[in-house]
Amino acid sequence: MTIDQLIKETGWKMITAASEGSREIHGAYCGDLLSWVMGRGQPDQAWITVQSHINVIAVASLREFACVILADGAEWPPEVIEKAEAEGIPLIQSPVPSFETARKLIELGV
Image (cartoon, rainbow, N blue to C red; front, top):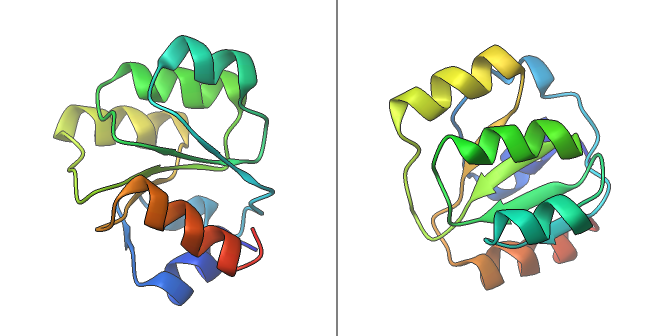
């Protein structure tokens, strides 16, 4: 599934420019402890988190995540959006908690 398809199927909000919308998502990782995510996340996964600070972008870049999904209706700060756009990291906002966000990805075959 591509990021564009995910947005179309879920109605979640794409926060950054959609230049990476054709990127394929292969699996997902849920986690909020950055060191844990750095050690276990895999390239091309969607990362589901409730963390929205600037260090999320560094971890997403390091692990080469396909996108970062901010769950539970949390909002991305402007400086994080700016950094994500500079790094080419797609940011998505999900209005539902992490569990339901992950369940939706599973339902969609991610």
